[in-house]
Amino acid sequence: MIEGISIYHFLVVSTIMFFLGIAGFIIRQNLITILLSIELILNAVVINFLAFNKFLYPNELQGHFFGLFIVGIAAAEAAVAIALIINVYRRLKSIDSDKVNEMKY
Amino acid sequence: MSGFHDILLMKHELLLVISALVIIIADLFYSGNNKSGIINFSLILFFIITVISFVPTGTGNLFGGSFQGSSLTDFMKDILNVAVLIIFLQSESYLKKPENVEKVGEFFAIILMTIVGMDFMISAGDFLTFFIGLETASIPVAGLAAYDRYKSKSAEAGVKLILLSALSSGVLLFGLSMIYGATGSIYFVDIASKITTSPLIVIGFIFFVSGMAFKLSLVPFHLWTADVYEGAPVNVTSFLSVVSKGAAAFIFTIILFTVFKNIVHVWEDVLYALAVLTMTIGNLFALRQDNIKRFLAFSSIAQVGYILLGIMGTGALGMTSMVYFILIYVFTNLAAFGVAAAIYNASGIENISGYKNLYSTNPKLSLLMMLAMFSLAGIPPVAGFFGKFFLFTSAGNKGYFILVLIAVINATISLYYYLMVVKSMFIDKTDTPIVTFKSSVPMRISLVICAIGILSVGFFSGIFEYIMSLSSIIF
Image (cartoon, rainbow over all chains, first blue to last red; front, top):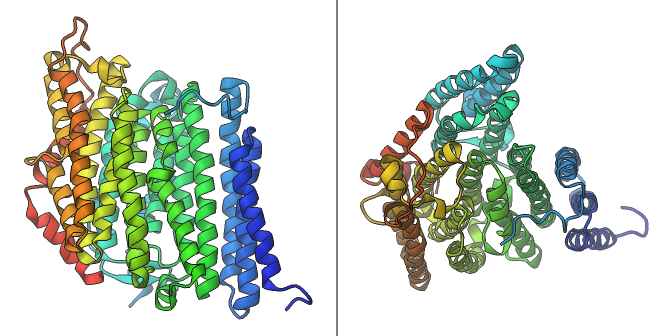
C-alpha cells in the first residue's frame, strides 16, 4: 500500500486522537475548546474509516463515503453548537463551562 | 414493480419533508400580527399527513437496501406521528404567547424535519443512513431546547444537549468504524452474516451501545437528561422524552435484533447491567425531585430501564412488548406533560409542591394527572400496567427471573413518588391553590386523546395482537 506505513500506524494515531478528544471534553472549561475536542473525536473516526477501507477493503468505497458524510455532519453540528454557545454568551457573558451550572443534580 | 410504486414506501418521509417546506414558505406570507395563523395552518396540515400516513403500502427495499420499509416500521412511524400531533396540540397556547409569536414557523418546521430524521433512522438498512437519520433527529432538537431565547436556563439546556449529543455520536461512530473494519461492510444484512465475537467487534459494539445509551439516557450516560428537560420549554421536553426516546428505542431494538442477532449472549450481559442500573438509579433520583420536569425526566429514565427488559426477551415477543409499551408511554407521558404545560401556561408554576389542593380548583386536570401517574406506576386498570406486564413477561420468558424481581421492586419504589404527586394534588391543604382556569381548545382535545389512550389501549388486546402479527413476520 503505502511504503513503510502499515494500518497499525493509522489506527494508533486515530485511537490517540479519539482519547485525547474524550480527555479534552472532560478536562477543558471553555465551551469552544470542548467543541474542538469533539471535532478531534470525529476526525479520529474518519481516519479509522479511511484506513480500514484503504488497507483491508481496497476494492470498495463504503468507508470513504462514510468519512465524507461524517465531515459534512460535523460541520452542521459545529454550526448549531457555535450558535448555541453565542446564545449562552449573551445570557451569561461567559463561555466557561463552570458558569453554565444553573441546573444540577 | 414500477419505480413510482416503490417510492411510496417512503410516504412518511416524503409527506413530512414536503409539509416542512410548505410551512417554511407559508411562514413568509403570514407577517407581523397575524403570525399565529401559522399555528392553525400547521396543525391542520399535520393532521392530514398523519391520517394519510396510515394508508398501508407494504414491504420492500429502496436504494439497494439502504432503506427498508415494512408494516412494522410504518406502525412505528405512525406512533411517532400521533405523538407529535398531540405535542403540536399541546404547544398551541405556549406558541401564542407574545414572546414566541415571531418564531412559530420555526417550531413546526424544525420538529417536522426532526421526525423526518427519525423516520429515516427507523427504516435504515445500513449504518450510514442510520447515522444521518440520527444526526438529523438530534441536531435540530438542541436548537428547540434553547427556544426560550431570553431565559438562561433554556440556553444552558441547548448547549448541554448539543455538546453531549455530539460527543455521543462521536463515540457511536468510533464503534461503527471498528465494526466496519472487522466485517468490511456497513449494510445490516452483510454485517449480520459476518459477525463473530472477535475482540474488535465486541469493543466496537460496546462503543456503539454507549453512544446509543446517551440518546436513550441509560444510567451511566444519563446526566444530561434532567438538566436539559428542566431547561427546555415544557412542550420541547415532552418531545424529547417521548418522541426522541421512542425513536431511539425503536432503532436500537431493530439493530440489536438484526445486526447483532448472532452475538445475543454478548449484548444480553451488557443490557442486564444497564437495565439494573437504569431502573434503580432513575427511581432513586426521582424520589428527591420537586420540579415536575426534572421529576418526569428521572421517571422516564426509569421507564427506559423497563424497556430494556422487553428488549432482552428477544424475538417477536421482545419487539412487540417494546413497541406496545412505547405506544402506551406516548399517551401516558404526554398526558402528564400536557397537564404540566397547562398549569405552567396558566400560572407559571412548575413545582410539585405548588400543585397543592389542585383538585379543589381544577378537578378534571387533577384526575387526568392521577390517571397518568397510575399508568406510569403500573396500577392495573390503566394501560401502563399492561405495558409493563408484557415487558416483564418477555424477560421472564428467557429466564431472567432475578432481573424481573429487581424490576418489580423498582416499580414498587416508583409507586411512592408517583403517588406523592397525587397526594399533593388531592390531600395536601393550602390556602392559596392554583386558581381555576380553562385551557385552550387544542390543549383540551389533546388531553382527551391522552385520556382515551390511557384508558383504552390496555383493554383492546387486538392492538397487541396486531403488533405481534407485524413483528413476527420479521423476527
